[in-house]
Length: 444
Image (cartoon, rainbow, N blue to C red; front, side):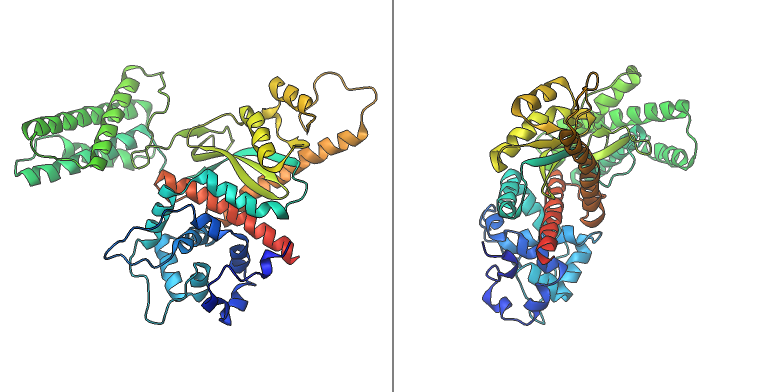
């Protein structure tokens, strides 16, 4: 099989003839670029519709490449990335384009718009299948797998019930000001200005007792209920006028749900609500209890990851917490369907339940689960050595992969707020890391 590292057919002819190509292909970005199957990934996007006023700066392959480039340029905002693309020929070449001297992308939100288009229209399962199909021929010993779960956190302010209520009140109050101005009616009276001063004083306090928190929550719940009631009156009196767009209607329904949940917490203090909203800006985010000493609760995407021959792929991903131990059998079945039979599997003690042990024994899979029962009189030294190696590999390879994704591929704190874009950034970050790993092995 020819080495993809020396192929230049993925580039337009005018770019491969450029002397810059030979500089670009040996760089880190160039090595990653040559490992990614852009033609197959671009076929997953629908053909762009004709749009007036917004030029198509990049092709479908270019848009896919731009999303991967965002993951490779760790810590760079979308605005900074657009400015770099305008001035850096290497980043333009990564996106299958070379700008002329007087050509620039002037749209400030272009990178964010491309991410939104790709995130909303691409199928993540097909994206992963195409990526693994491209990498499959370069992998060895695909029968040995490692698995573990981690949380890729999103950038979110520490959620509390007081903050959630205040953010909701501010949105409802601002919307009512817009509605009253459009309808040319006076603003209904409320205690919003008084509560704003009290909220500011509350935020300045370093120590807040439970009694003060409870008092603040009761005041905010009362104010939110009053504001929502005033809006319903305005909407009833002006039933012939559409006050809210579809997106604003969804937010208003969310405000009503927040009020219902917070009233329930006040009436039933030691209670909990499944899938409760914890953030007004990102209502899809759920608390994920990890039990870590310095960070007991995390907010973001919990991902069940599988490692095979040095690369990683995603078996399951969700914004809600789940127990990775119940994913063991599904992981084996998914890996078998794509790569073939599994000979040995490395996983921590969370996976070592009786069902998984019986399943592994019936399938002839060697695991690193802790042994049950008394020690055998005649231990199998060869098997014990393999089990120990599996356990060490899981501790080093998986944790190292998670750290590499978070530190080098923009997954330490995902800044996007759209859930589709957040999932897209996880996929592109993981597979950009895989492409870098394969390119380094080929160079070596």
